[in-house]
Length: 566
Ligand code: C2E
Ligand code: MG
Ligand code: MG
Figure 1 (cartoon, rainbow, N blue to C red):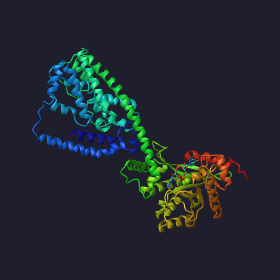
Figure 2 (cartoon, rainbow, N blue to C red):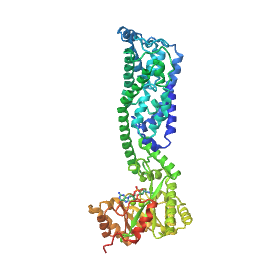
Figure 3 (cartoon, rainbow, N blue to C red):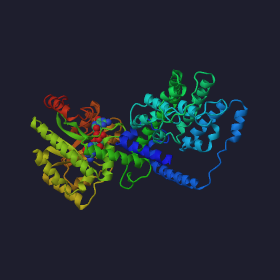
Figure 4 (cartoon, protein in one colour):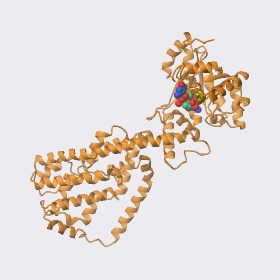
């Protein structure tokens, strides 16, 4: 039953502390196996608990086992003349091994190991084990010297929900109740903690027996409840300050011994977490409809679902943001901005907005997310219009999947009306993450958008699913050449040829050619020479938040920061 209670309390703690998946993966104190595996293990572990329960039930039906299994050992230890040293140490060892396996060591010793100890209430003897010595001078905070483990975590682990599990467990550990730590961190069956979980109590019992045998303090023949807090128990059992001081020393020693293991667990966790995340996001970014990520039962699926949960929550709580990246014309003057979703995650370099978009596309949340982006961008554009920047366009990225929503044009129209915008002020960049399906709904949506007068642009042109046929299907105002082509245009002549032919195509069809990922002046000049009309990239500016934009607009509308060579 302790397994079941332990797991239940650990799971409740998890629910309390891991309200966000991102906190979960931020957990600095997750051990081996990694958090993702341990979450998946929780159902098998509950089943294991139930099996234990069943076994216990069966066991109670059988005649009681005789409690003299340790008799030969006890006889040998006593004959050696060092009964207290041996038997206390052996009892501690057995207790720790059982707890490590998730079995209540104390109860098992009560049932089968009575002979190891002097009977309760009797004074300490050098011949036998003494249960109060183990309970109050070794299991400080519970089996495994949990208080020391918690102190070590407090010193090493600075953030995340495992730290909070430790914090929440601390009040219980004061009364030596530690199931939530053992099953919650977990310590049980965790190879990283096998050595200290058994070793620290052994060190402490040897010190304790030594302290008694060498007369550092004397033990009173009192029995006190095992829930008595540390220091109070030290005082009650010895009737002197030495008992308290000794417990303090033990706490410090225990903490020092746990520290390297906690540190190692923390390092491993951070490394595994980063690897798992990087691996998963790579799959998520490259996913396509044929191999969906969300139903997967492996780590990638778990991470994907967790991230999607967070994205949904952030969308609901309005915790997402938009940034705006300026677009400049050939003269260097700003002509508009592109709205880019910003998702604040603990690993911004790994969990990028594109990861969120990809998950939203797969789950269908892209419709809601897309509308949110559109709404925010329109609202922002209206504010800019009010302060005199009506000429600047705002481009919004639209996933091809959004085009399957027949109501998109109508909703956009309502939005424009709400914010008092005219259709030409908004440009929709159709991102090439997914295929633009050639089905009646999509064609109709495209037609309606064109008829409304909103400008359409083909994003990431030249890669992925981009097809020249699209140019025949709908009126395109601009083509954005994919960043992978413009990025190394200076060194890759094949790219140059492709860009020149895209430009020729654009000129023939009276379409604006936008170059993305323009990072340097040389790159911009080369792209300009090839015939691109609009430039966007870090060379001009990174994406800016709304409050940074007006100043940028002011500077880049009036002064021409770059003079066109022609
Ligand atoms: P995109 O539409 O092609 O946007 C350009 C991406 O390139 C942005 O990344 C931008 O920050 C980055 N970028 C711009 N200039 C440079 C540069 O000079 N150097 C480098 N290294 N990077 C540059 P971001 O914001 O991470 O967005 C990635 C993609 O996610 C976007 O590609 C777009 O496909 C998608 N996305 C972003 N926001 C939205 C959205 O609101 N809706 C939809 N459907 N997709 C979005
Ligand atoms: Mg774009
Ligand atoms: Mg692009």
